[in-house]
Length: 214
Length: 422
Image 1: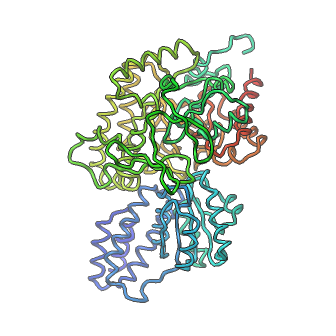
Image 2: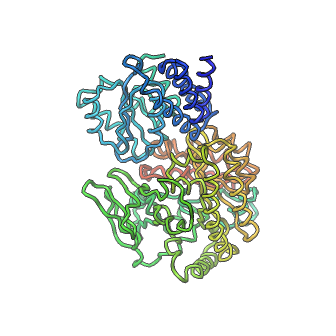
């Protein structure tokens, strides 16, 4: 039964079991289940559940990483079977850790969770100068710019980057989502970001609401 | 209390660790690399106080922390010191540097970062490998070399040689920057005894012996987090190799200063903002048995108390950390999930000493007004200090963005709290 197969893939991704997830995905394809159905009825909801379990404190970073790895392994198998129109990109996100800050684990996790939710991610890496954010926005016309800072001393670079986007006339074209250990909703309000996410699980949920996908 | 003799600093710290009410709240500033002050903040503080003597000596070069000088310790009533401060006491052990942010400080003579054209500073080891970097705009050095990035080796024979390629070990703070010298252990004992005889303060030795963190240093955090879930047997093989090295270090520390030093500090950052990095069951399987061995060794072979530094939200792990044998926990990151001060004190106050949690360095100490800082600190003192089990310190180091006025307001709050309770 196809739904059993999808349930197994769904559960294997949540458990971070890439072996089971990929074997089952291959079997599902063989049985004629469309790749897009596996993607949207097993993979994407699995990552959504992982994010929600993480938000509730029932999953941990290590488990989120292996879930994301399992999802990527399944996506690699699905890719050759996905045809134009199968993949519904719900938005593009330019993401990076701000200037002076080399910490990228949190930012990478956010990238993975957003990708799992159906976003296209343009990852600028760590220690990203404001000018680089500006160039990436010009080039990619993203829906969202995601910025991360781990340190109280690099948080001000979020403000500088938003200011630079304003000066370039690009601020109104994008939603700005910020996060990182010391970042708060209050800080987001102060610097004029559109949203703040306290963790990678909520980041995916909030990013979806920013682009109007419930 | 009115008629009793004031305690010495050491008595005060030891009473608090024994969960007895000390005569006043014991205070730390700079006894560990997670209860200290950044060189930038320290320089700014001295300038604000009009102190033109002495030096801002960056004893922890990775985190760019200053070694607080005797007059600063006296001014703020600090009760505990690191034995490392008895090393590198000569002017020739240091050289003058102006930080990119303008502060005139001193670096240890052995520390020679290379300034690059883009304004970043790199550190290379003897093999020419780049082991650390501080980008323009940053205020400390990040690790750039991960010895086992590509996978686990067949043999761990080369582990002791590879460890210094990790910047935390390769750029170790005192006393460990002298560890390779032939008379190191004898000197360590002499200097610890000197401090015992010439100060009334409790003595700390920073041992490290990190387990989870060494995995992340060698494999990189993202890889190691996946490893502990996907290949626990390989992780255990690495942890066993690390334990062999750590136990050799512990044996030497206990033998050399175990009868002189009061507290031994271990480190292992187990928490993120939102909770532990991994499930509690994983801690029990991989790390708790080994933490228990480290703590037991110290208890059986020294008079030292066991101190663990772990950042983040570790509420879920605290019962197991207590069972493993840790008597003191730092930095008590009260701004993380589940780490509300009242809850921690109520649930664990009888069983562990909170070393930190006295001021939030993320939002209050850096961006509050002095009056807000005082109120914040006083509230935390009221929660944490009853019945001992508390040593006052900020949540982790005082970062460069903390204004001197707020540091003074924080210590004024401690002073006023102690006077009110006397």
